[in-house]
Length: 202
Image (cartoon, rainbow, N blue to C red; front, side, top):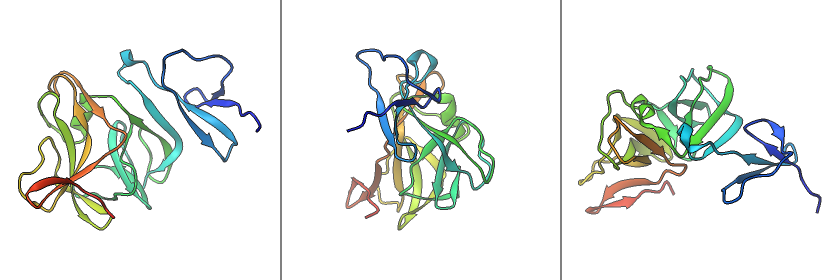
């Protein structure tokens, strides 16, 4: 076995020092460059608990503004808005930078986003402390169409032919004064046979 050097994704340099104890680190093997990459987290005092970043992976089929939820398919990514369709097999992401149409850039998946970003999914959206937030869609096969509701903090109590994709939850207070925790994984739900059930595209 040949030892591999560690590449630091955030600083774009080789690792030449040590790391702190009692921390969680995420390593991904980059077969193209034959190296292990360390995906570095950010300090919680600056508003982020862990950040996963991928370089030049997100192709924008239309211009995407900075700091918004994005969804995509084989044609590329765009901002998540009412009437936008996307492929459920593609990851739901959050970008912190603007991406020009027809180009690629960083995308970020945060496990902690301040709530001001939540209102950028739906202008004027308000909720209650510790509520879960869902993206509301209608689905055909693996294609999802974002509903006019866009997001909600309430799951249905009757069948409505919609699916509810978990985005994350609000923090300890309301959206006006605390943060929105954006999950890396996004379970899907729908109401069927008198109860809420997990939804699967298979």
